[in-house]
Image 1: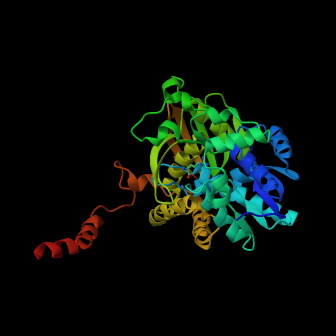
Image 2: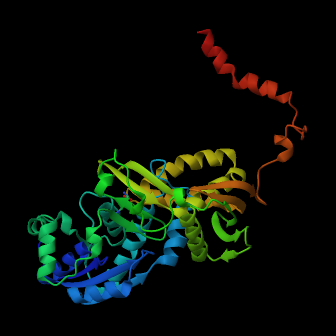
Image 3: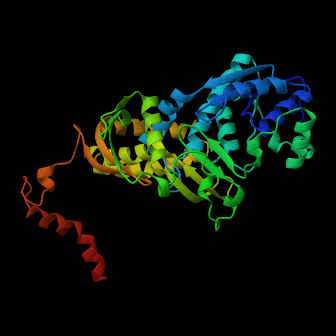
Length: 406
Ligand code: ARG
């Protein structure tokens, strides 16, 4: 689909791919508005905006989405204990919906009907963007150059892109020389491609852009206390020095820094992509891992046994929906209503120790605690008549006896 004379809003990262897409769309006779989403990646946004203008964008939006990202996306995922295939805390997947949402808002403001993104045709991100656009702006036309035969015939490989960039004075970023595909935001940094494409190969820890590996983490543990209100962190106190942090974004940044210092949240895994292929990734989710562990621990005393059980089942499904790009879907909305409801009792404090890659809960307390010390105790009767257990087990095991007689 080669377009001309259209107004297009392009999700622009400042990297080589989206710079080429931007320039190419203009060459095809279109007007392009560049939209840059700041979700906490370590970038120079002024530089990116200047680059977009230099590539010919008619207007550049740099949108600071950090507070909204933490509050309405990261913390919701934590409340749900959302996780994919048992390990991945969904750092990239949780950021895509908010990026797409603002993209649509800008298109509407600009009166543009075409939304363009630079995600490839092999990954999950294309689905996450496009499914969100479909829900939020059903009348939009989605243009995905990496799925357009015309674009593909012009850019068959890296060399074509570099030649094109040279011809149009598009600076080739140093990151091109880096052998990894990195996606970064406040929640995580992901590493894919390069040596990681062979799952039997180890990576070198020099791959990490920031933070410490547990090998080099401090030899002294650090103790913190996290207070939760309705399943969201409302305060963190460093128990070693008394430093207190409040406010959603400040708390999150503080935990990220502590996590990076102690080498927390590194996962090396092979996952199943939505498109079916397996893919190896290394994820660093420092603050998210601390919060996830603390939150799950607090739920152990604040959630009813059966609510906990059904929530656990939903968590797996929610993780899958987020991974598969279905944040804006009726089923996600439906499940998250139940999560919201469950979080009403998730209030209290969790003390955590951070030490060489681990973030472990060491104490928990809550005014809504369901833990009954007297009933659980080995030392006292606590209003629990042990002889009652006889009848309970007798009835509970009726079917086992019946089955054994056959
Ligand atoms: N495999 C992860 C996911 O699908 C990370 C993707 C990273 N994205 C990227 N454009 N480098 O969520």
